[in-house]
Structures are given as structure tokens and as C-alpha cells.
Image (cartoon, rainbow, N blue to C red):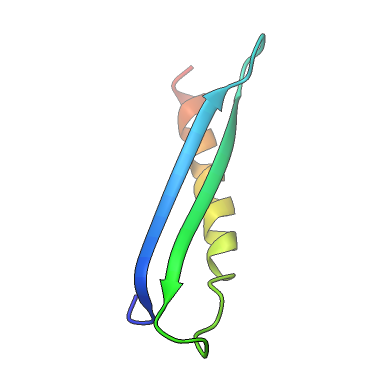
Length: 62
């Protein structure tokens, strides 16, 4: 986080109409301290893994 002035991660989950399951939207908003800082693409895999873990958790409660 030393490379960003600000970093906001928002997760929006909405139930699918007429069926089971949900649709998940991840929104990342950030401001780098300089143009030399790399784009945070490495967080994409993190988002995939967290989505899978949330899915497993919700399915285990059914």
C-alpha cells in the first residue's frame, strides 16, 4: 500500500433472478503515487480466490 495514495475495493453481490446463485462485481479504484508504480494486476488472482472461498462458504450454509 506504500505505492498508492488511495485504494478502494468494493464487492457487489446481487442474487440471480429466478434461480439460485448470485452475480459478483469487483470494483477496484486506486491512485498510484507515481506513473512508475505497476498496475495492481496481481490482485486479480486474489479476487478470484476470495470469490471461490465466499462461494464455498455460502454453499456450505445451505
